[in-house]
Amino acid sequence: MPLFDYECRDCGKLSEILIFESDDHPQCNFCGSKNIKKCLSAHSSMSGLAKNSLPGSGDTACCGFSPGEASGCAGPGSCCGKNVV
Image (cartoon, rainbow, N blue to C red; front, side, top):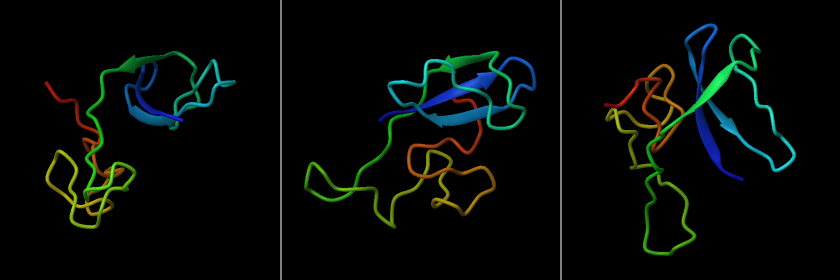
C-alpha cells in the first residue's frame, strides 16, 4: 500500500496518507477536508543490499534530519512538511 502526499486546499497543510485500494476519497490529516490534491512526492530511501530491506537508522529525510528528529518529519523520503522545488 503506497503512501502519497496530499495538499489540503482548505487549510493548506500537507498530509502523507497511506492509500488502501478501497479508499477512494482520502481526507486531510489536519482539518478532515476531502478537498485535497495529490502532490508529487520524494521517493523513500532504502538501506542495505537486500531489495526488501527497510529504511535504516542512519537514513535521513531530504531535509537532512533523522526520522522523528525534526517537527513534521515523517521519515526517510519525507520532506518534513516542506515543498521541494
